[in-house]
Length: 119
Image 1: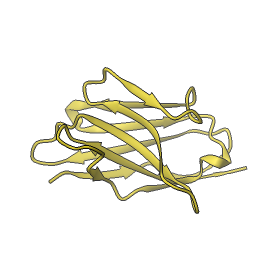
Image 2: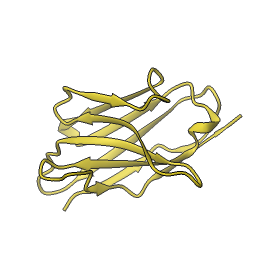
Image 3: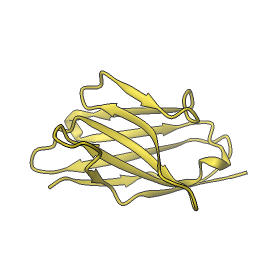
Image 4: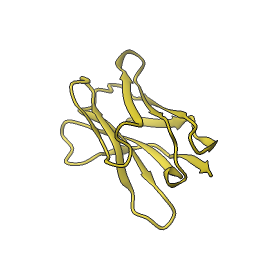
């Protein structure tokens, strides 16, 4: 079984930065890709960024491109999301997710961490 635990959320003023971390644990953790998603109140969950575990490919949602950076540390089973130039509309619960090779979609999810950006 795989467990994902996010950390690093909090309250920050617009223009500030936060770094989210996702710690993965499991007997054999070797996903195809890791992603960060977010869900704001009253809105559907959407993808923020994704990275393949090999690091060969990344994807960013249009609203965060150029401001957010996803990275991973395979040796530590960690995934990070560096968020810069934060805006109030960034406020949401951020989730870390893993997609294994056999899965059609992301099949492991963390519990989420709250990010609140004030104007």
